[in-house]
Length: 196
Image (cartoon, rainbow, N blue to C red; front, side):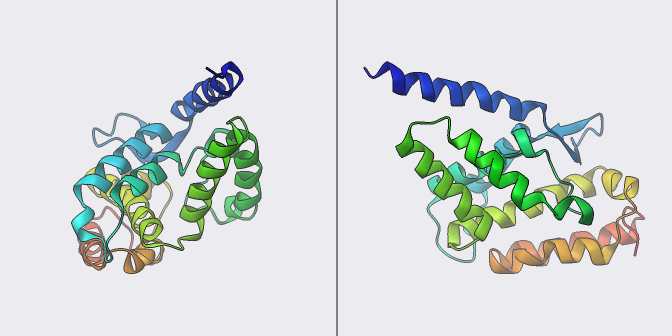
């Protein structure tokens, strides 16, 4: 057994425990607290396995699950940038790149390359798996907001056009989820969860 390799793998595994500490803006459906990024990633992995039939193109479900489990690991260092925070997005890519360098760099080189490649694939959306994973990543907060009465949207004065624009990438990964998202957005406005 290569103890140096195992030491590096364990260092990575222990480091990613920090993802449990990163609070997101989306509330749990109970509305009692915000979800953390590890919970979000787990939820996306389950969604990927349950909803795959709605992906616009055939996908390798195992690859999608691995992708969504690691796609936000960089938030350990970079933090969660709220999707509607224009200022926070100005340096988001650079913060996340530095985080990816450090966190994936903890792994043995072969695994570092494998995980980094998967993370970059998600970020660029350049495969059917990445487009499907990104669709799920956009869709889940929409569900959370709708089923909490727009709690996070109302806290930040978010409007229908902002949410529609945020959901638009669903069109590249799942036309079915895009149509459902449009319906949810309309219902949210009708119910007063989302400003028109």
